Length: 260
Image (cartoon, rainbow, N blue to C red; front, side, top):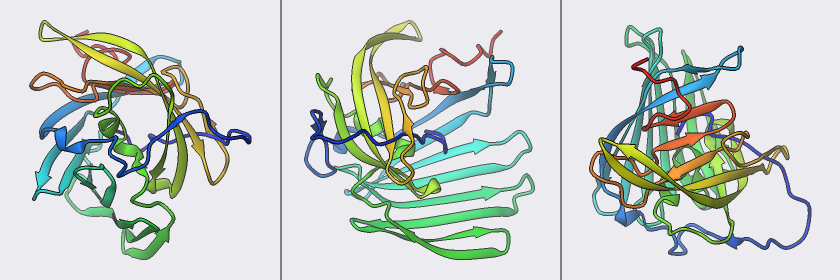
């Protein structure tokens, strides 16, 4: 869920003991997901080490036809500028098909845009900044989960007793990753007087291109998801994601309470 859901470095040699997930192998079931329109709070750790509120993030998901999910993420900066990211996914496998981004200034003028079409072997697209445009291409493919919406397909899975390994990407950084997701327990979240059970999943990222490692957990750079497979009405499938410096949440946790 933020443009910077990035992160991690190669684990040395040997065959993996983890379970594996590949897009289209039937483990992910995007067909069970229902449309939603929900707003999360975002916050970051400031120079003083305290959590500071940032702008809200609204995400909407709809079904387009029978085979495609469209997810749109909307944010407004303090200067009045706005950003819209649109992600088209295969409805069943949650494989990313097309990504679009539009950034506007407070007066509505276009600051920049990007569009990427993905296949099983890579992507092609175009980026524009001001009056400058360029064609782009790379290895990020439809066989990798999109890092900015990664919690959503994971929420369709049952609780995993073993770490789950899969490929993911952050196309904004032209980066691909090996990701190891570990289900580490459950949590109970309170929403409008209702107790909602959530799985906690730590995300360990390994950056394939530069070898950086981002360890999993809410106090590390890889982060943790809170996931709900069957949320009550008005409650998200991914109520929280938190790293050591960033959090996006529907139920108050790390971010400052807006009522205080």
